[in-house]
Length: 348
Ligand SMILES: [Ca+2]
Ligand SMILES: [Ca+2]
Ligand SMILES: [Ca+2]
Image 1 (tube, protein in one colour):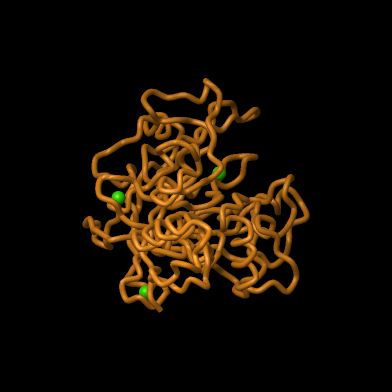
Image 2 (cartoon, protein in one colour; image 1 turned 90 degrees about the vertical axis):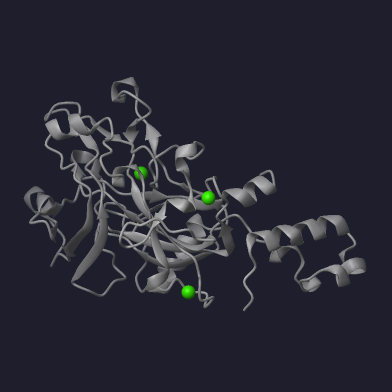
């Protein structure tokens, strides 16, 4: 199948506009089948959801809703209904590692020296008591790692060797976010692990006492860590994804520094979740530059910069492993992914 690039789509758009309402009279001039009409135009938005595997969390089986009998394919489709085609609904990826893979109807072009797409989440600023020095913001920032794939072999799928990770600020050697000092004082682990691996174990039964709530979903990692995703009083549905028939889930990837600090007291906690400088999902206000990603930030498995002509697929996973009191686990949320060049061309 011939893949249409953004440029080709843009040219086609120009052709249609020149033809005005009389496409049939000049259809011979069009490189593409005229019968397809405007729907063959590339859209700036997500048009496919290939896979949705959230980590256990308080919004899992709710955003989107799991109904008895739903398969992986049905859940993928539900995610598309929420965040595809500019719907701007919301999905939650749960705790560290939970992910979604989305695709587009064209290749998002990598324009030199410019950010190419943006990732929409639900991050927001806290009040003035959540401020730190510099551009860093405090509030509700739950950063997710972004990977991109260019469909080099043109098979319409993101093959394992086609993925590259977008490297944000926390992964820059020697760089420290302004809030690291305070986070260290609070006992947070501000290391960034490129080789993190975590396994979550499906509970035998749902908890019925506060003690069981605290030890709800057990996890172990490859750094000697272990702990639980607790069940909170606000969300009582099962947290383990119900359509996955496995007694455990393992995720591998980059684990970001723990970015939540309790600026209240133990009795009256006030958690502030700080943003990273750039390069992550759910880490900036949607209409700010911080939500936008340059494909040239992609690196290979050795951390070396790669230059991709564009991107056909995007994968996003929750990058922080931290439970923040009654707020629950840090979980990346996603509302959409948009091709900035197409948006600009169409002046949306
Ligand atoms: Ca670029
Ligand atoms: Ca491929
Ligand atoms: Ca969020």
